[in-house]
Image (tube, helix red, strand yellow):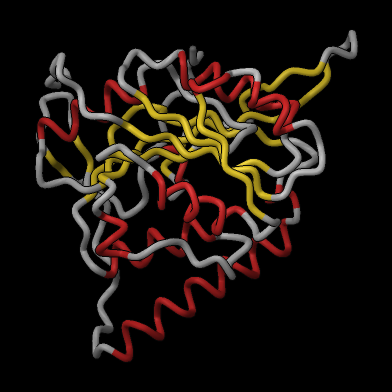
Length: 266
């Protein structure tokens, strides 16, 4: 795959936070660990009552801090988008992590296929567990999979002018909602076959409520069907496209994306 040039475009990273002070240092560290520059870091504090502001303040001008009254993660991401300086945008939930080659590999995909507006990747789910000594660590829950998760993708900022911002009324599955709209509009996107998000599950995740997640997911699918019916389009959404190491687009034979073998991630 083609490597990014030395004149890399700016990537704005938007980090929504609600009472996540204990994760902020790790989030900024995983951004700093990217084998890529330049990066514009924007932390949007969604009405936290913990030490989030003080924690971010320790980074000085290196991190831009925005505060808003509590409105939910979708509204926080929209706030970040309104001030993003980069031509490319990434989203990182404060409790998640990235492999250090995420940006390098995804920018290489944009160079190989300039028509792409979104480059996605695989998600490695990690579960917070305790070992025999009571030490809490995040361990792989299952092999990596393809998921419409904002944190696994990299976006051209202009795509939000085409698809629109996130639905601030959608507390759960707002990422699936946005990606579904993008697919309805046939926005060019592809998946690279590598892990681009380490999704860390723990007891305080917003997605911890399984029933609410399922309910919201079904609502998103229902709205998508209704929109397509209103437009006279009853066809299924197009199959996912993948990008090989040779920089060429292809589709898998099956409808379901194959999982990757679980491998240690840096």
